Image: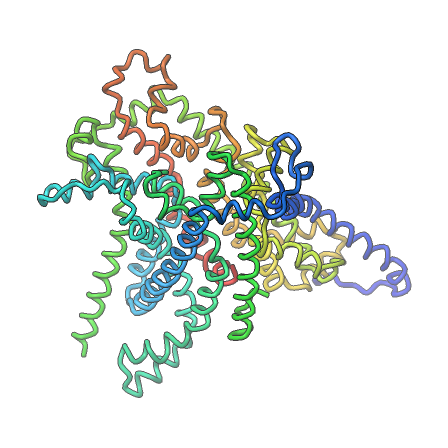
Length: 317
Length: 295
């Protein structure tokens, strides 16, 4: 910065235009690989969504296949699957949003009350560990708990004199199991997210409240929660914007692909994958995928619109 | 009053110790079952503390686990190449976006941003990669689709540049005769180390843990990553015993610790993350905090 010397302004102006052009080209050249990648990886598949209105022919590809109008959609909605996957996707999302945020906010507030600097850090570090592990490994761990013959839970039940349960064949347990797994894997992540907001709350507010004689609970109610309101609303609305999407790994790996429980574990993502590769049911898969993309888009726009209304700074755009 | 405060802290600590245990204990079950001999495991089941300590699962893996070593190699290679190229591409894309001089700046930003709002989904994506680019059963399939550049990280890095790198520094570098690339790599990059570290870790974790790309695009066992091996073993319990006929011919098949082995592979799959994580945890936490709300 110390080397700023003002050269002759006339020369500067002459060189200015060429220099600017050179600079623009250099900047654009940096972006070239990324632009090409986004076009291929993201934009071409968007155009490829038209496959939902075609009868897909492997030989002809997306563009060469015949148009069939809405038949993929009517076929999809004729089956019970359409209802199941919609119900599961939305239902699990609602449960995860509600419980996940409730739990995370509680943990974040408790973390803020903790005194020890090192213990605080230790707890923060450890609760994040499940978040770092792939769903495949998680499914192995869950299997260790739920295996019919010698899983930890069945052994526990047996040692207490109960009857072993065949977890992987009975659908009634799975809404609870999947919710627990999701909470377990995600609570550290969202707790830390909320905690970052909690520590940002002006500490003089607490001091003032203490002087006024407000107890812990009153402080939480009147200072911490209002301070978290914007973050909670933002995260919840963004999650609602992703209501038609699900964690493919959670719903595909953790139930160990057991067909007997698929009516309560298959979400749109699992259905699309199965239709595409296992059942060779491209038509229905593409119709479900199309609905997911389009409805997801509408929902995320609406959610963002809602965030903007409530708190402009938290909106995505 | 003082007693009440201490009491509160004790209760809080107990709650957090329980939370910590519930976060870690499941891994203990995994580790313990990989360290139990097969007979005990089948007879007594999964326990948190191994009853009969045994390293047979790991010994078996080392003796006959050429697939596992190969898988480890694939995972390492893919994570390395993927992370380096992905971070580089993200950097090269995010930096110009942060510069006011970039023509069509708003348009380019929107171009990235839109990919976070709308996508084609699996069906067209799968068809494009397999039919147009013939990516099936290549190493590229594990590196390129979906993972190579994420709009989310681009936006995150751009915001960092906009807020933390003063224009004056870039201006000064330009006047000193530094080209755009020189400015980025010699001036901006050294100032952005924590951000680069955070994003590299997030991207690296994504590559290490990825199993979907191999599920979609890879059927050749030579290209199986650790995650892919684990994934196939769920549907094919006999994976090791069937594929290892030459190596395992001198081993009594009935004594193969198949359950323990699967758990052992899962353990060595998560081990590197567990080893690295404590040293870099502040970057992970930072990544979550910076990226979370705006994601």
